Length: 617
Image (cartoon, rainbow, N blue to C red; front, side):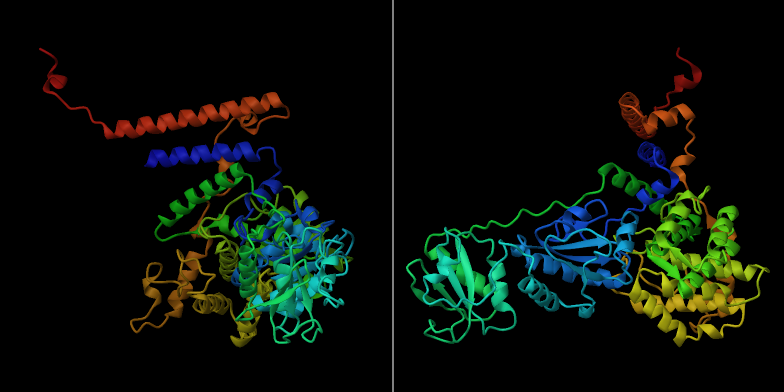
């Protein structure tokens, strides 16, 4: 298996080189960090990205309800099931409205989320039909719902559609019918209408309007609402009725006031008259799918490192995870802010200062340039877009290319960035403890509190952290030792609160750390923590001597000469591209053949005869 693993690693490495060689270091980091998000192609939710937002939202004859979310946000993960349920429930309405979602945890969507001034997750916006792109065209905020239930959302969507004035001629008619006779109802219907179903306006909530919406795509059918006291109704307590082309009205029994009951009653009536319940609903938009080659290659490489990391006992601290934390904080979360000023700018300066001082693996010159840029006396406000450009042009970049190793998860939205951020701040408190540069015990904790308060994408997590910091007296820390232990205790408190939660990765359950596998001496005989032993463990585990470089810029570590790189990267023209593809295929085949030969050669042992030692007689 050892040879097989090496072959897999080489194949994946070559694949990633072929994909990424033509990209800048910054673009490669962005590409590698693309995430799956919380919604898939089988959900009735349109996946919006920077590449398709203009097609989905702007100049669209349909209304759009767009959720801005962060895949790592626990609240978003819990809410996603509600949003999916809404998408499924109103799928019959898809000729006039779409349910959509955009993942602000994906770097490619940074500019979109910044332009839409997203400050908390999840945020929902309403974009009316034929919405035009322009400055500050960011939709109508639905913050008044405040983590809505399914019923809240269904009512909100119904109200918006009923009151919409930009719907155009295809928009359903929600007005109460008030004609002189039942034949008049056909004058307001399409020419091929066979039956008009009448719904009593006195039904619960917005049920009458939702019944209209449920049937807007059913062929040869129209649904109208009438006031419960309408003069043409003989029985004022009716729920549902039907009018035929002759102008005859009769009631249709419905027992329970539910959308499904009305749909079933109408469907059964149509079947009785030998009419199929055919729909003219719009075909669902295909959700964008990431390039298969890029995604599968990155997944293979991540899985390779993940399996290798889990075999290490005890598992070290991976520098790749720390680099990912820094990359996500600076190149993603911070730059999503439209403007950074006041307390936010102070928090950013403190955070970068701590990184520059205590993250010893960083490029000191690049950190100094960034800190100088932020600390310029004339700078009272930083634009997120400008900061993104500054970081993109830093040479060398702030961090190396990497993927998650110790913090990797096979499940979307689990561990990864939050895990790496905890690791980074644990590492920084330990480095601060070992350093003699600054005796302020609060320096790292203060920077962490400021970053989480002003920039951390999970607003619910930030709220919990600030409440915990206040409750656990973070501002009373008086020594560097206490700072290390305060953060250790805080992390365990969070783990205890989230153990068994929907957001937990079942392969990595939330435990009280360190457990016995990591530090047997950290517990006393009575089960209580031995804090002196815990402190020594934290110094070892999060110190520089325990850091492993596996997975850092790994594809480029393959020893390829310049000519080989040119072949694998493709070229500026089709000839080079075809040569690159051909060479790539040939090498993969050769590697697979070598792997098979090794496997069978290991499985075969030549029988030893005596004449092999003495010679043939």
